[in-house]
Length: 203
Image 1 (cartoon, rainbow, N blue to C red):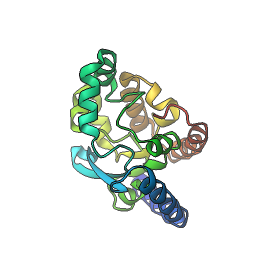
Image 2: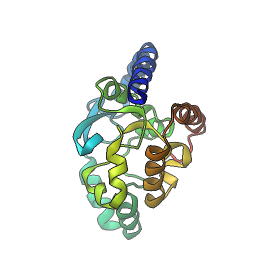
Image 3: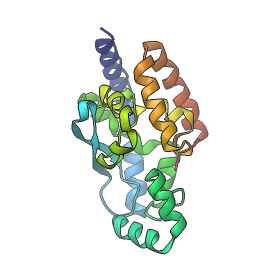
């Protein structure tokens, strides 16, 4: 019953958001074309529910030669190498375009995941989608991660996002799955609006 309620809420909210999201895409596309040539969207392989893989949609925030930039940066900066190995993220990422940095700060780059939610691959709220290389970091907690659909937002996003260490992130994913209620989703959704407004922990 809970799964049916959660799915119904996901679809209803996404449908309501579509008229707002469309104009946002048009404006972002215009800014991207003027500052960072290349495709507007991109897909990335992520681990979903039951350990099955899916293609997650995002707005492109990086330059088209991002892989070469990352290799060069990590090779020349030992501190960045340690930061990358710890969280698979860089606070000062040379791959991110100027418009992309703004999109990440406001989380607008996540908007295309509405399509993943409508397709049933994601939920609006759940554990943040991970890549295959991150599975080992979850240890026994991966069973909890794989028990739920990944979310566009979740406990991690409203608890500091990229400012949280990885161990804290996996604990939050486990907590969400173990303690989930419809009311918890409502509270996370409300806290997400506040966190996005403050651009907290996003880079």
